[in-house]
Amino acid sequence: MFLDTNVLIDAEDFVEGLFRKQDFLNFQGVLCDFIEGEARNLHKGQEILEKLKLREFSGYFFATPYNSKEGSGKSLEDLPSEEMKEAVLVEYDRKLDPSGMHATSKDAKNAARSKSRFTDFSLMTVATLAAYKRKKQSVIISRDRWIKLSCKALEEKFQLPLYCYDQWNFSVEEILARSRKELVSKKR
Image (cartoon, rainbow, N blue to C red):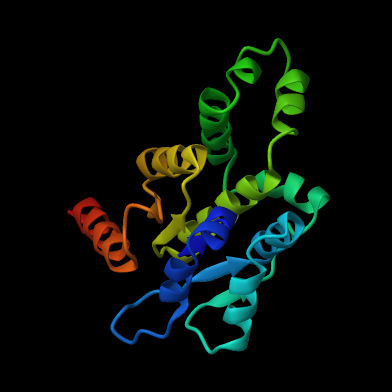
């Protein structure tokens, strides 16, 4: 389960529940270095970050090459295929930047995208690679509409076990139950 920055900031109890050692749940919470960096830049979420580091929790901190503006700007290049990259960018253009979708040149589209938070692109890339290479389910916890739509597009078009759930609507157990149910129905 990959956390977005908004989860760290807005749902401390949820994050603690996700990272608490629970023998009966078969998952690992993942906190990527660029999410930690964004929380520090926003000056929000430090308290939960310190709690996670001081206590023994299930899950881990994941170091990436995307923990800088330059590195995260190149994250989409690391998606498993050009088709997956295009699917993610189509959802981005369609839902977050309609003006970029109607841009007259590729440079105009790229300029519109460069104004976005690259952390979201990095999170999509890391979770997609985990689902694609490890052939295991990846769940992103985020309320970001574009991330949800991108996960849905990748799941439908490429049969990736990649899902996105909002921390406000579900408990950890409900998220796991829903994602297991979707995974089982896909195998049938």
